[in-house]
Amino acid sequence: MPTRHLKIGVLTHVRYPIIEPFAGGLEAFTYDITSRLRAREHDVTLFAAGGSAPELKAERMDISSGIRSDAKKHDHDSLSSGFIAEHHAYMSCMQRIDGYHFDVILNSSLHYVPVTMAGLISTPMLTILHTPPFFELINAIASRQKREGGFYTTVSRANASTWSDLVAQCAVIPNGIDLDFWRPGSGPIHDHAFWYGRLVPDKGAHLAMDAARDAGRTIRIAGRCEDQPYFEREIAPRLGPRATYLGHLDRNALVGEIGHSAVCMVTPCWDEPFGLVVAESFACGTPVVAFARGALPELVTAETGILVEPGSVAALAAALVRSHTLDPHACRARAEKLWSLELMTSRYESLLDEISIKACIDA
Image (cartoon, rainbow, N blue to C red):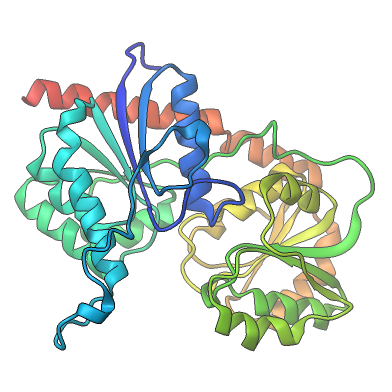
């Protein structure tokens, strides 16, 4: 653990506030890393959307700045007012960020502006690649690599591989969770499956519902409805006595649901960069059945879960039937070995310290 106390700026996605119930894994990560770095006596300033948890004491970044309404767009302008407002929010932040005199910036934002401007500020910045490559960030990183490179990390070996053409040197720091919070519950385990996450096509909740139906298993699902047409088209018609939607749950409710479920289902329809659901489920002693996409083969072992062909409802249903053979104690042991929040924080702490020292030497 570094002996120096660092002054750290943290950038995050500003579309949603950092508050429970979290919109997704990125918001949960931001809350946890900010809180834990502060607990280790680092001076941390989080830049986040208004409405974030009061204990975070975030510097507010508003994306509804009113710079230009859709009604005032030129005919040739295809960019939404939301896109432009988000762009200007990050631009404003980056233009003044050197004034905070941070030792280092932890960029967890997924936005192209911080990476694009990183070479124009004096404060060193570590960017976390939380997702596979996408257009705007590809362009930003490619442009910066031509100038002077940068500092990058990501959450799995699989995701590092997707970025390897652009980022040859990318540290891998797996996500971590609070193992004192995410832990097995007391009381009976109910013979149903549980699915939770963002309700969007990429997460594939409808496939989990179909597999549970075909396996004769009851399923309970929870998550934020981010795509109403998808929900109405794919989720609502599948609901009934054996398929229940619980709404968007906070972490206290989630840990109770997971800990009393026989199995969790993870059904990505994209190359999942990590799979926080897997770590949380294992910590609660709950095995998983999942599509073998992205980083999931790095997380799941034969004792803790069953991986099947991506997109195959039949294979997923067959895995549900066999899931009673999986070992809850092995699940918890794997979470304790690999995904402690303290371990993750120590790794970020060391890397941030290393980057700040290097910047001082190079200055």
